[in-house]
Amino acid sequence: MLPTVLFSLALVSCTVGQAQVPTLPPVCQEYSSATNTPPLLKLSNDFTVDVETVSVETGRVTNMIMYYSQSQNMIRLNIYDAGQKNDLYFYFADNEILSFDYTVGRGTCTVLSDLKNQPDTFIVGGIKDGKNAQVPMTVLHLTGQSGFGTNDIVLSQQSTGTARGMDTITFNSCQKWQFGGQSAVLNVTHHFSYKTWQRPDTGSVPIMIEIVGSALLHKDLTTIHHYYNFFNWKESVEPFVFETPSGIICQGRAGDRPFPASPSYIKFAGEVIDRNQGYVRYVEELYDSDDDIVVMRMQGMQDIGTTGGMNHFTYIRDYDSGLSYRIDNQMQYCTVLNITDDITLPFDFITSNGKVKILTPNQFFYNDGTKYNYLGTRNVRGMTADVWVAKTTLLTAPDQEAVIEWYFAPPDVKSWNDGNEYYKNGHFRIPVRFRAWLSNNTESMDMNIYHVDYTNIMYGTINVRNCYPDKNSNYYQIIIDGAKESVMQTNLDMFKWNAVVSLSKAAGVRMIRIADLQVYYEQNDAILEFELLDAPPYSGDSSVQLPPPIDLDTAAYNLENTIANGTLMINVYDPNTNQISKPLPVRKTAKIVPSTGNSNSNSDSGYSPGSMAGLGIAMVIIGGAGGGIGAYFLIK
Image (tube, rainbow, N blue to C red; front, side):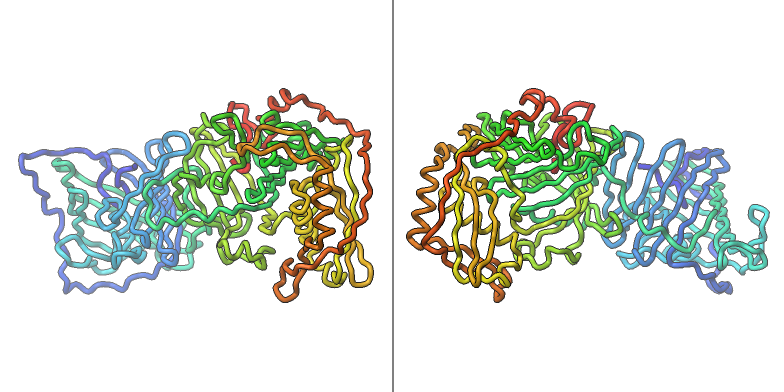
C-alpha cells in the first residue's frame, strides 16, 4: 500500500535535526477565534481533479487523480508515485478503504476497516458523522478541525496572491496535523482562482495549496515544504470510476452479499472473447440437472474467429445413460459415444472410479464450497450488474487455479422470464457475463451471456433421430379428446415437451427416444404423431448403476398397454393457471406403423474419438495455448 503522502506528511523527507526528546518548534500559532473569518467559496458536490504533489525538500513529485462524489458517498485516489500505480477507494457507507497495489500481475487488494482510525483517511479530511465523506472544503483541509484540541480551522482575512503566474484568492491558516504517531505544525495557504481570470471552470476552484512547517516523523524533526497543484478541475465524475478493478479479490470486505441461487435448469447463448489468442466464438448451452441432460451447440474448429459455422456441431449428453450424441448439423450425421470417449464438456464431472455424472447446480456455477466476495456494481452492456469474484480450481482442469467473476443483472430487471413460476419462486438471477483469469495473467477470457431462458426445455431442442439411421422404430398416431386448437396453440412448444415427457414415461424410456412429434387438429381433438426409437447402445459410463435400456418391442408394449387401459393422460394449456397443467385423456385406440430405419447418413463425425479429445482444448470452448485451461467455459 502506498504510504499516506497526499495532504499528509509521510513523504520521504529531509531530517534536519534529531534530539533525545525532539519537540516541534512554534512555526505558527492558531489564529484567534475572534478573527473575521471570510465567506467560503462553494465547490461542486461531485468533482474530478488532477493533483501534483511537490516535495521541495526532497525534490520528489507524486501525481494523483481525485474523484469525489458526495452523492455516492465515495472518494477514489488514483496515485502515481516513483513509477508505481496505486488506488485508494474510500467507501464511507461500508466504513472501509480498499487499497490496490498494481506492482505484480493484475494487482493485489488490502481491505482497511474502521475509517476513523486509518491514517489514509486523513488524506481526505477524515470522516463525517462516522459514515460520510467530508464536504469538499474539509477534504481540501480548508475547513474542519485545526488539530489544536477540538478547535475548528480559523482562517485569516481573504486576500489576493499569485500561484503559477495567476492571480488568486488566498486563505491562510495555522494547522496541526496528527496521524499514525506523527505530527506537524504548518502554515497552510490555499489559492483559489480569481474572478477576473477567464477559465473553463464555472466558479472559483482550487489552484494550489502550499504548506510550510516542521514535522516530527519517526522521532526525527523534519522541515516540510510542499505544494499541491490542482489541474483539470471538472464538476462531475465519470459514471464508472468507482468500480473496482476486475480480477482482483479483496478478502474481508464489508457489505458482502450471498451469491445468487443456482438453478437446476438454464438455457442461454454465449459470446466467448479470448483476449489471449485474439478470437471470438459463439455457443449455445442448455443445462438440465433434473433430467440429467445437457445440450451444447458451437462452431466447428475451422470456423473459430469467424461468423461461419454457427451451430456447426451439437453435443447432447445423456448422463442417465452415459451416452454422448455428437451431431454434425451441416453434414447431417451423428455419432453415439460413451461420454468418457468423447471430448470433455464443461458439464462433465468424472468420479474417482472413472464414471461420469452431470455437475450439480452449485458445481455448475462454482458455488460448491467456493468463497465468493461481492465486488459491488458494474456497468455491463448498458445495464447495472452485481459482481462476485472468487479464486477456485477449474473442475475440468484441476491443476489450474483461476480467478473468476460472475455478473448478474439486478433482481428487478425485466425479462421474458418474468411469468415463469420456476424463475420467480427460485429467486434466480440472470447472468450477463462470466470472466476468468489464469494465474497472474493480465488478460481475461470472457463470456457475454444472452437470451437467458429459465423455462423448461422447449420441444425441438433435443433431436437424436439422425443418430439411429439403421435402427428399427415405430410410428404412432394418438388422439387427445377435447384438445381444442385455440387452446393448444398457446405455448405449443411447451406442450410438445410435456407430451414427450408423458409418452416416454409411459413407454419406460428416456425422453430422447420420442422423436419428431407433430400436432394436428380435427374438430375439438388433437392428433399427435411421433416416432418411438429403438434402444441406444449400452454404456457403462453412468455413475448410477442402471440396467441396459429396454428394446423397442418392450417399450412399444408398455406404451400401447397404457393407451389401451385408458390411463395415459397428457397435460394441455389451462387458461385458469396459465400453465400446461390440465390433464386430458388419450383415446384408447392408437395407430401403429412399424418401420425399419433407413438412412444414408455417415456414422462418422470426421474426427476419431482420440483426435476429438485432442481438439478439446482448442475447440471446446475457449481453448488456451498456455496449456490446461481447456474446456472450462460453461461455464467453467
